Length: 269
Image (cartoon, rainbow, N blue to C red; front, side, top):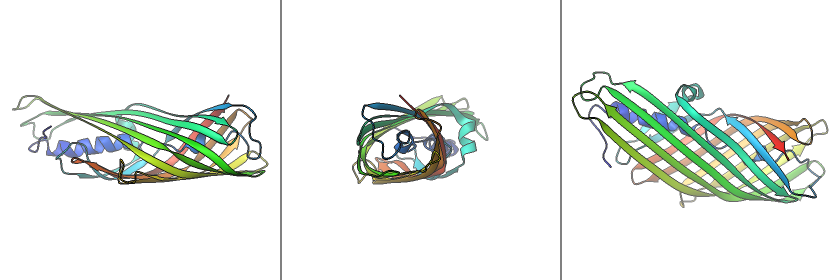
């Protein structure tokens, strides 16, 4: 794998920014899928919760999308993400039986950008595309349960897959195409707290930490939100989330922090 240093120097920054746009759409907490069952009323049967959501996060940090490319500092707002977004799908699925639950958080995003180079000498056009899949798979156990409050212990893994394509076309040099894919797995542990008011409003919070040098050096995130239960089958939630991850491998760098509001809903079957 080689990397263009001449006129593609500006492309290096573009690739980093593009990858960061994708990353800023990632991973809402599993608490979105756990709020439809009121505290103090554990289900007698299996329940299935499906929770689509949106995380409007901005991103700051340092990214090198290709090995041997110098890391670029990025600072991207959520509005920048929307300008380059091709496709995105985010949902959490939870299967629960009494105090025990299994959940998966599946995210896929695809962004692309096409930009002309300033001088059109070596290359006249730069095309960037980045696809990211992130799947969080875990289990929860509820050791504390009162009439209105509960506390869950979380443990699992978070799988990351980042694929970036850079195409340089036109100009004095032949067309060039560079591709790189990076995959890693982070073990994670965490806590999820919940409090239900009598009027259908509930508060929820989440804290997770992981990586521990297995995949990333360290990753941690926190979430706090407020929700409303319309009935036994449908609820909605809004809150704020912060996520940080520090991953480096063979010249690939993804050392970022992401923050922004989260909105979502849960449908219980």
